[in-house]
Image (cartoon, rainbow, N blue to C red):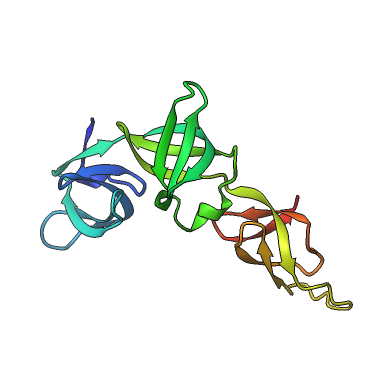
Length: 187
């Protein structure tokens, strides 16, 4: 693994520090009037989510880690575990459903997700940014309510509540942004 200087740390870098794997969230370079320059880095632990603020001087050496990314197909969920299959080797992998967090309801059968591995350990799962869902429940269209920015609440087929435009009705397929949890367009 390559070692980098403390002043070369950038947001998004994965570092091995204090016996754990940390992602650099924010980096600010400070040049005080007295003493040497340093990088003030906000780190987030990739295994348990802890946060840490650390100072790295330019002469400090830090271990930079590269994660392997694999596209895998979601098969099914069992006992809080998500089962994915590698599309090349057909090998199946069980991961904790907690890795997806609040985006879990958007995971659909057969969907391809990108899983980041450190060696054999899965650290994160990311699903496509836009997913097609069906509106299960919403209020009927009120005639004359065509204000430009009026939205109405809706419940999707996966149980997630979002705001949708008034012209979208029950049973319609829509595309939802899974990062912002909002309506994107009609499917």
